Image 1 (cartoon, one colour):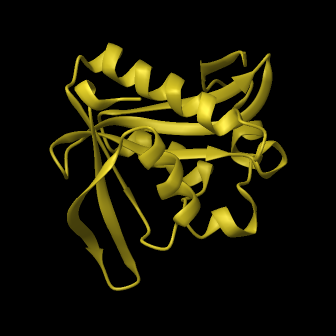
Image 2: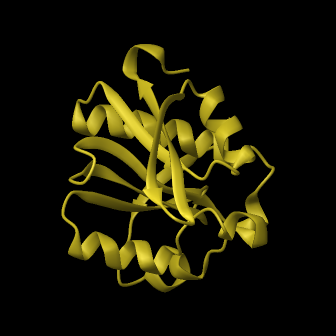
Length: 154
């Protein structure tokens, strides 16, 4: 069993978190960690965390209450390119989902993803997220909206 934890972002680890990278394919689907950290300071309601496996920093997540969508949202989720394909993403997603349901006492979690993000959509669907059929964004920044109901999670 993988020991995955979410950690606070501090003055000691923020640079390392900003240096994590999802790889060429993933970079087209997720905002940079530095952008997300800055966004969390100017948009209220977001929780930012590093993802670690046995004290090894492997990823980043941002989640919380989306004022724009008026729902609890998994806004960012990334695993560094060096740690992909090892099962860490699935284990981390479970920890994030459990944390969100526990922390916010919400009944649904939403996320949005690029329609071309086949890999991400596959993982989300395995966890019980289903497409709402809604699209958000405009121009080149269009995303599909997915929802996970607490009663349907993995």
